[in-house]
Image 1 (cartoon, rainbow, N blue to C red):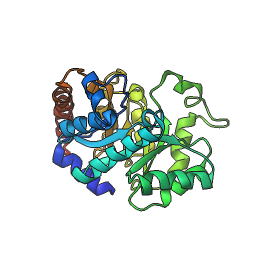
Image 2 (image 1 turned 30 degrees about the horizontal axis):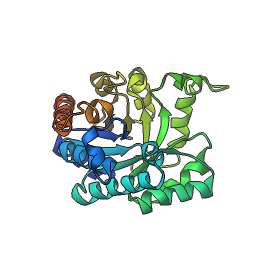
Image 3 (image 1 turned 135 degrees about the vertical axis):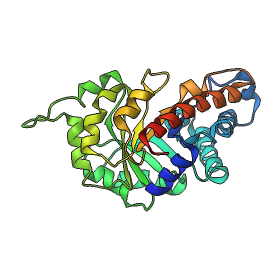
Length: 277
Protein backbone atom coordinates (compact mmCIF):
# COMPACT_ATOMS: atom_id res chain seq x y z
CA UNK A 1 0.00 0.00 0.00
CA UNK A 2 1.39 3.40 -0.92
CA UNK A 3 1.11 6.81 0.77
CA UNK A 4 -1.80 8.02 -1.36
CA UNK A 5 -3.78 4.80 -0.93
CA UNK A 6 -3.44 5.08 2.83
CA UNK A 7 -4.53 8.73 2.76
CA UNK A 8 -7.52 7.94 0.54
CA UNK A 9 -8.67 5.27 2.99
CA UNK A 10 -8.36 7.76 5.85
CA UNK A 11 -10.53 10.27 4.00
CA UNK A 12 -13.08 7.65 2.98
CA UNK A 13 -13.49 6.24 6.49
CA UNK A 14 -13.01 9.64 8.15
CA UNK A 15 -10.69 7.85 10.52
CA UNK A 16 -7.03 7.31 11.36
CA UNK A 17 -7.70 4.46 13.77
CA UNK A 18 -5.33 1.51 14.09
CA UNK A 19 -6.67 -1.36 16.19
CA UNK A 20 -4.01 -3.26 18.10
CA UNK A 21 -4.45 -7.02 18.12
CA UNK A 22 -2.55 -7.68 21.36
CA UNK A 23 -4.46 -10.90 21.82
CA UNK A 24 -3.84 -12.53 25.20
CA UNK A 25 -5.59 -15.89 25.45
CA UNK A 26 -6.00 -15.38 29.21
CA UNK A 27 -8.11 -12.26 28.60
CA UNK A 28 -10.39 -13.30 25.76
CA UNK A 29 -13.98 -14.39 26.57
CA UNK A 30 -13.88 -17.87 28.05
CA UNK A 31 -16.54 -19.29 25.72
CA UNK A 32 -14.10 -18.90 22.81
CA UNK A 33 -11.69 -21.39 24.38
CA UNK A 34 -13.76 -24.24 22.99
CA UNK A 35 -12.93 -23.11 19.44
CA UNK A 36 -10.23 -24.92 17.47
CA UNK A 37 -8.21 -21.68 17.32
CA UNK A 38 -9.49 -19.32 20.04
CA UNK A 39 -7.00 -16.55 19.21
CA UNK A 40 -7.96 -16.42 15.56
CA UNK A 41 -11.68 -16.62 16.35
CA UNK A 42 -11.33 -13.70 18.75
CA UNK A 43 -9.32 -11.68 16.21
CA UNK A 44 -11.78 -12.45 13.42
CA UNK A 45 -14.72 -11.21 15.45
CA UNK A 46 -12.85 -8.06 16.54
CA UNK A 47 -11.85 -7.37 12.93
CA UNK A 48 -15.36 -7.85 11.59
CA UNK A 49 -16.71 -5.59 14.33
CA UNK A 50 -14.26 -2.73 13.77
CA UNK A 51 -13.24 -2.84 10.09
CA UNK A 52 -15.66 -0.09 9.05
CA UNK A 53 -13.83 2.32 11.39
CA UNK A 54 -10.23 1.09 11.24
CA UNK A 55 -7.66 1.94 8.59
CA UNK A 56 -5.02 -0.37 10.11
CA UNK A 57 -4.56 -3.40 12.32
CA UNK A 58 -1.44 -3.99 14.37
CA UNK A 59 -0.84 -7.52 15.68
CA UNK A 60 1.73 -7.41 18.46
CA UNK A 61 3.94 -10.32 17.44
CA UNK A 62 4.98 -11.22 21.00
CA UNK A 63 1.44 -12.31 21.85
CA UNK A 64 1.65 -14.90 19.06
CA UNK A 65 5.29 -15.95 19.41
CA UNK A 66 4.56 -16.85 23.04
CA UNK A 67 2.48 -19.81 21.81
CA UNK A 68 5.11 -21.21 19.47
CA UNK A 69 3.98 -22.81 16.22
CA UNK A 70 0.28 -22.55 17.08
CA UNK A 71 0.70 -18.83 17.75
CA UNK A 72 2.34 -18.26 14.38
CA UNK A 73 -0.50 -20.15 12.73
CA UNK A 74 -3.04 -17.91 14.48
CA UNK A 75 -1.09 -14.84 13.34
CA UNK A 76 -0.87 -16.05 9.75
CA UNK A 77 -4.60 -16.82 9.65
CA UNK A 78 -5.38 -13.39 11.10
CA UNK A 79 -3.29 -11.53 8.53
CA UNK A 80 -4.59 -13.67 5.66
CA UNK A 81 -8.15 -12.94 6.78
CA UNK A 82 -7.55 -9.17 6.77
CA UNK A 83 -5.83 -9.27 3.38
CA UNK A 84 -8.59 -11.40 1.85
CA UNK A 85 -11.73 -9.78 3.31
CA UNK A 86 -10.53 -6.23 4.01
CA UNK A 87 -7.76 -5.76 1.49
CA UNK A 88 -7.87 -1.95 1.79
CA UNK A 89 -6.73 -2.10 5.44
CA UNK A 90 -3.09 -1.52 6.35
CA UNK A 91 -1.45 -4.37 8.33
CA UNK A 92 1.40 -3.60 10.72
CA UNK A 93 3.56 -6.32 12.26
CA UNK A 94 4.54 -4.86 15.62
CA UNK A 95 7.72 -6.88 15.88
CA UNK A 96 10.34 -4.27 16.87
CA UNK A 97 13.07 -6.11 15.01
CA UNK A 98 16.58 -4.73 14.58
CA UNK A 99 19.77 -6.60 13.79
CA UNK A 100 22.68 -6.59 11.35
CA UNK A 101 22.04 -6.63 7.60
CA UNK A 102 21.63 -10.32 6.71
CA UNK A 103 19.46 -10.99 9.75
CA UNK A 104 17.33 -7.95 9.03
CA UNK A 105 16.88 -9.18 5.47
CA UNK A 106 15.47 -12.46 6.79
CA UNK A 107 13.17 -10.61 9.18
CA UNK A 108 11.97 -8.49 6.28
CA UNK A 109 11.26 -11.56 4.16
CA UNK A 110 9.35 -13.15 7.04
CA UNK A 111 6.98 -10.24 7.51
CA UNK A 112 6.73 -8.91 3.96
CA UNK A 113 6.90 -12.09 1.87
CA UNK A 114 5.66 -14.88 4.12
CA UNK A 115 3.08 -12.96 6.16
CA UNK A 116 2.26 -10.26 3.56
CA UNK A 117 2.25 -7.41 6.08
CA UNK A 118 2.36 -3.83 4.85
CA UNK A 119 4.71 -2.60 7.56
CA UNK A 120 6.93 -3.73 10.40
CA UNK A 121 8.19 -1.86 13.45
CA UNK A 122 11.99 -1.68 13.63
CA UNK A 123 14.44 -0.55 16.33
CA UNK A 124 17.12 1.88 15.02
CA UNK A 125 19.78 1.25 17.67
CA UNK A 126 22.17 -0.60 15.31
CA UNK A 127 21.97 2.06 12.62
CA UNK A 128 21.35 2.16 8.90
CA UNK A 129 22.53 -1.32 7.96
CA UNK A 130 19.95 -2.84 10.31
CA UNK A 131 17.12 -0.86 8.70
CA UNK A 132 18.06 -0.69 5.01
CA UNK A 133 17.09 -4.31 4.14
CA UNK A 134 13.48 -3.59 5.13
CA UNK A 135 13.42 -0.55 2.83
CA UNK A 136 14.29 -2.61 -0.26
CA UNK A 137 10.72 -3.93 -0.62
CA UNK A 138 8.32 -2.04 -2.87
CA UNK A 139 5.14 -0.68 -1.29
CA UNK A 140 6.27 -1.87 2.13
CA UNK A 141 7.00 0.31 5.14
CA UNK A 142 9.43 0.53 8.03
CA UNK A 143 7.99 2.06 11.20
CA UNK A 144 11.03 3.19 13.15
CA UNK A 145 10.96 3.60 16.93
CA UNK A 146 11.55 7.27 17.70
CA UNK A 147 9.96 8.40 20.97
CA UNK A 148 8.05 5.67 22.75
CA UNK A 149 5.26 5.90 25.33
CA UNK A 150 6.83 3.89 28.17
CA UNK A 151 8.14 5.59 31.32
CA UNK A 152 11.69 4.44 30.67
CA UNK A 153 11.86 6.14 27.27
CA UNK A 154 13.78 8.89 29.05
CA UNK A 155 16.60 6.47 29.90
CA UNK A 156 18.01 6.91 26.39
CA UNK A 157 15.61 8.68 24.02
CA UNK A 158 15.65 12.02 25.85
CA UNK A 159 19.41 12.12 26.44
CA UNK A 160 21.32 14.98 24.84
CA UNK A 161 23.69 13.96 22.06
CA UNK A 162 27.30 15.02 22.61
CA UNK A 163 28.27 18.28 20.90
CA UNK A 164 24.63 18.91 20.08
CA UNK A 165 21.59 20.51 21.65
CA UNK A 166 19.40 17.68 20.33
CA UNK A 167 17.87 14.75 22.16
CA UNK A 168 18.76 11.28 20.91
CA UNK A 169 15.29 10.74 19.41
CA UNK A 170 15.70 13.94 17.35
CA UNK A 171 19.02 12.66 16.00
CA UNK A 172 17.33 9.36 15.11
CA UNK A 173 14.68 11.25 13.14
CA UNK A 174 17.13 13.53 11.33
CA UNK A 175 19.57 10.75 10.46
CA UNK A 176 17.04 8.13 9.40
CA UNK A 177 15.19 10.52 7.09
CA UNK A 178 18.13 10.08 4.72
CA UNK A 179 17.56 6.30 4.57
CA UNK A 180 14.04 6.38 3.17
CA UNK A 181 11.20 8.70 2.22
CA UNK A 182 7.72 9.55 3.42
CA UNK A 183 6.55 6.76 1.10
CA UNK A 184 8.25 3.94 2.98
CA UNK A 185 9.24 5.26 6.40
CA UNK A 186 7.04 6.04 9.40
CA UNK A 187 7.91 6.70 13.03
CA UNK A 188 6.57 5.54 16.38
CA UNK A 189 5.76 8.40 18.74
CA UNK A 190 3.87 7.58 21.94
CA UNK A 191 0.66 9.47 22.67
CA UNK A 192 1.98 10.15 26.17
CA UNK A 193 4.75 12.18 24.49
CA UNK A 194 2.33 14.49 22.67
CA UNK A 195 4.09 17.63 23.92
CA UNK A 196 7.03 16.74 21.67
CA UNK A 197 4.93 16.35 18.52
CA UNK A 198 5.27 19.97 17.39
CA UNK A 199 9.05 19.65 17.43
CA UNK A 200 8.87 16.26 15.74
CA UNK A 201 6.71 17.73 12.98
CA UNK A 202 9.41 20.33 12.30
CA UNK A 203 11.82 17.50 11.55
CA UNK A 204 9.43 15.09 9.75
CA UNK A 205 6.57 17.28 8.48
CA UNK A 206 5.25 14.85 5.87
CA UNK A 207 5.87 11.39 7.30
CA UNK A 208 3.20 9.24 8.89
CA UNK A 209 3.51 8.69 12.63
CA UNK A 210 2.23 5.60 14.43
CA UNK A 211 0.88 6.75 17.79
CA UNK A 212 0.33 4.12 20.49
CA UNK A 213 -0.86 5.01 23.96
CA UNK A 214 -4.35 6.47 23.42
CA UNK A 215 -6.91 4.84 25.68
CA UNK A 216 -5.69 2.49 28.40
CA UNK A 217 -2.27 4.20 28.59
CA UNK A 218 -3.87 7.61 29.07
CA UNK A 219 -2.79 9.49 25.94
CA UNK A 220 -5.04 12.29 24.66
CA UNK A 221 -6.34 11.92 21.10
CA UNK A 222 -7.16 15.62 20.92
CA UNK A 223 -3.67 16.67 22.02
CA UNK A 224 -2.07 14.22 19.58
CA UNK A 225 -4.18 15.56 16.70
CA UNK A 226 -3.60 19.21 17.54
CA UNK A 227 0.16 18.75 17.56
CA UNK A 228 0.63 15.96 15.03
CA UNK A 229 -1.84 16.17 12.15
CA UNK A 230 -0.48 17.34 8.81
CA UNK A 231 -2.22 18.08 5.50
CA UNK A 232 -2.40 14.36 4.66
CA UNK A 233 -3.42 13.41 8.20
CA UNK A 234 -0.04 11.78 8.81
CA UNK A 235 -1.22 9.86 11.88
CA UNK A 236 -2.19 6.29 12.66
CA UNK A 237 -3.44 6.27 16.25
CA UNK A 238 -3.39 2.82 17.81
CA UNK A 239 -5.86 1.62 20.41
CA UNK A 240 -5.77 -1.96 21.66
CA UNK A 241 -6.94 -2.82 25.17
CA UNK A 242 -9.65 -0.16 25.36
CA UNK A 243 -11.28 -1.68 22.26
CA UNK A 244 -10.55 -5.39 22.24
CA UNK A 245 -10.93 -5.99 25.99
CA UNK A 246 -13.79 -3.58 26.67
CA UNK A 247 -16.18 -6.49 27.31
CA UNK A 248 -15.69 -10.17 28.18
CA UNK A 249 -19.20 -11.48 27.53
CA UNK A 250 -20.75 -12.79 24.34
CA UNK A 251 -21.27 -9.16 23.33
CA UNK A 252 -17.55 -8.38 23.29
CA UNK A 253 -17.50 -7.70 19.56
CA UNK A 254 -20.56 -5.45 19.71
CA UNK A 255 -18.93 -3.39 22.47
CA UNK A 256 -15.67 -3.29 20.49
CA UNK A 257 -17.68 -1.89 17.58
CA UNK A 258 -19.09 0.81 19.87
CA UNK A 259 -15.66 1.76 21.24
CA UNK A 260 -14.14 1.93 17.75
CA UNK A 261 -17.08 4.02 16.52
CA UNK A 262 -16.60 6.48 19.39
CA UNK A 263 -12.94 6.97 18.47
CA UNK A 264 -13.77 7.28 14.77
CA UNK A 265 -16.40 9.93 15.51
CA UNK A 266 -13.86 11.99 17.44
CA UNK A 267 -11.28 11.49 14.69
CA UNK A 268 -13.74 12.64 12.03
CA UNK A 269 -14.29 15.89 13.93
CA UNK A 270 -10.54 16.44 14.26
CA UNK A 271 -9.99 15.77 10.54
CA UNK A 272 -12.81 18.19 9.72
CA UNK A 273 -11.33 20.90 11.94
CA UNK A 274 -8.02 20.49 10.11
CA UNK A 275 -9.78 20.76 6.72
CA UNK A 276 -8.71 17.29 5.62
CA UNK A 277 -12.26 16.04 5.02
